[in-house]
Length: 328
Image 1 (tube, rainbow, N blue to C red):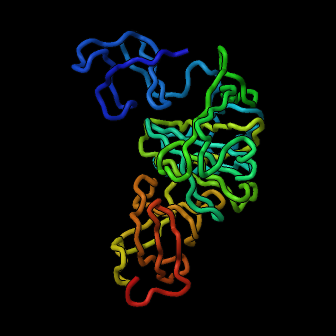
Image 2: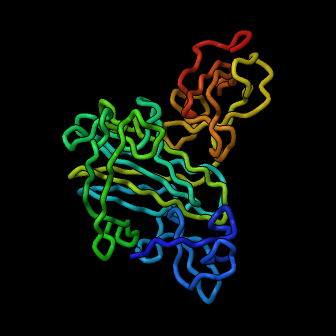
Image 3: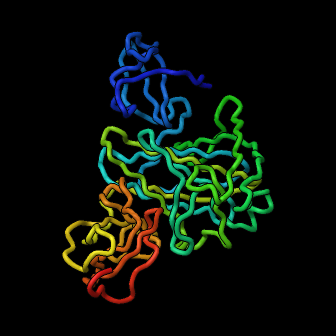
């Protein structure tokens, strides 16, 4: 197993680094070997730092984007790597935890997030799923896991056999403790709902801003604290999000609409010609910068300018039934 140590590199982004050193002054180069930052691995061989890649010793390979992975088993952490190519855009993840409490976290180019939005439940983070099922394993929105942890296996998805395998040598993994719902946006909270996500119309959507053509994979981890878990997820290939003309000043006049709001629909593969309740809203096509909270005039796909409310989480919380009149 790898040993955590302190090293230094010469870039804000690990994949752009030219070398790794053992000192802050970048004088003494580190030894050859594998290095990992935020789920991104690089091998240093003969003093030369190689390209970014997925876990080098898991033997898992990659799942091509637009593919779907199904998970079923017992308590543990399930890890899968998606090949998303060199293109730049937004990688949309559709996660279905069914009714079991699970936490899905994506990692790309040193960034990680565990935030979702869905049509029936809106913004959620951390462990999601059915609150009744969560209660049977000691998870509640009020208390989180109440300080408890869960022990299970560490699994990696092996693309050659289309199945998860236990990571060597022991595969043991401790999950939690999980924080209460009231602590979010802190990572690791419990955000359960009255009902699961099993219907196609209630999947949980995540947006990965793929802005670096040199980093070609997204690593996704699903934490399953319960004794049984059944889930699925799809990571769609990078694309431009849905464009809608808008005025970026909250409360502004209905025209002119001089910028573009980009949305990720919380249905299908994220593409939609119409605005939708609880859709993600961004300032750029890659999903890198959420639209700030406010009420904006936005031209919908039917050509009607509507007043659209974006909440503090960057999701659409309200859309006016009629056309914008005067100001929003």
